Image 1 (tube, rainbow, N blue to C red):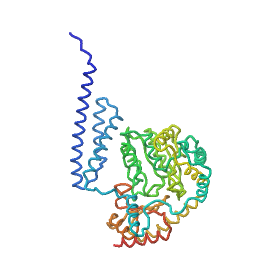
Image 2: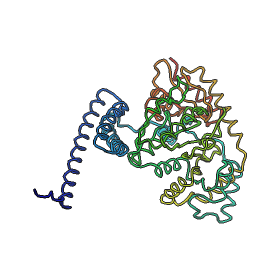
Image 3: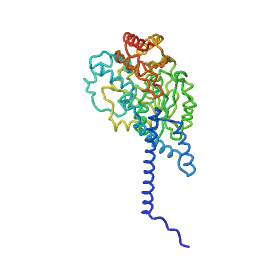
Image 4: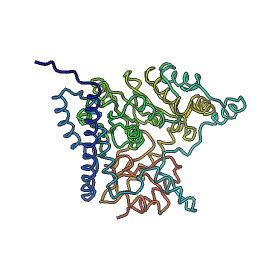
Length: 459
């Protein structure tokens, strides 16, 4: 009986080529099926993403993969890439070809009208109308005179990092200064996640979380919260969403757009779930200065896989300065620093010294101004056919219209009357009946804008 010959390298390579070609053919067939599904969904006016269908496919494929000895995480990564591609194909089939209607789209429409001579009351953008502390102006002038206009350490000038670290009760090595909170979110994701991973966000949510994740090929799963449940987190749904590919949970407190502050017990419950599954927590705390009920930072829970994000944009009215920061473990900060070095070198030196001056200034009055405005909005909304939960913090009201009033119609009726507000569906597809109203204007303008809102919602 002859011995079985060892396969030759060339033969194995030929097998690899043929198998790979078969895989590509099957992927193409799957894309064709996705396109047909997209046509049907478009005709039936159905939502593109259906998490229940994805979960059923995942269960089936994972069971099969386990039987043949494949790693679950590898299977999940491949599946997520396929799901993302299917969603992309199906969205291309929808009849909704217009630009996504979010707060920035409304802002640009309002700016276009202003350029044509129309006066607009801006209630769509979270940009405080008051100025940064006057010490910031003085420091900028001093920075120029002192020739501090050069490259700095990628992680930020030491004095700023030390000051942030001192105020947050962490070490300097745990802090990196970034060009705004948005880049902190992006670099935190890109340095800790990989293509095919999953993140979970609670909606309604700032759209940048989803946009950043999608850009790097990460699958976004959504746990919806509701005005009826006072925007409380659904922890059972969170647990149900988690798989071996879930690598990050995003928290935002106070929340944009609802103003919800996550209470200590719920944070503890989320951290217990995250710890059990070795999941990183990304905590966006940009609005923490504007807290009107007890508030606890993620840093106070000492969870070693947390990344806290903050910024000078809202608290110190420095949106155009583009200075934010992240606080995390030394290892994660080093990874973020590598991304930042590659992308931008460092935050502009004059802006960092402006931030130092801002940190040394007392800005507690900003929160008092915003609370007064939110209270004013609250009283005026009593005459508008809507439901809402008064915010725990932040600078917005997120309201849902009653009486079958179309929020989309209201958006454009308001714009025609000279008022810009943010569409609710920019914060999640389930919130098409909502609008976000910003309290970042003086009370006189708020009064004028809300008067027009009452006018266009009369039924």
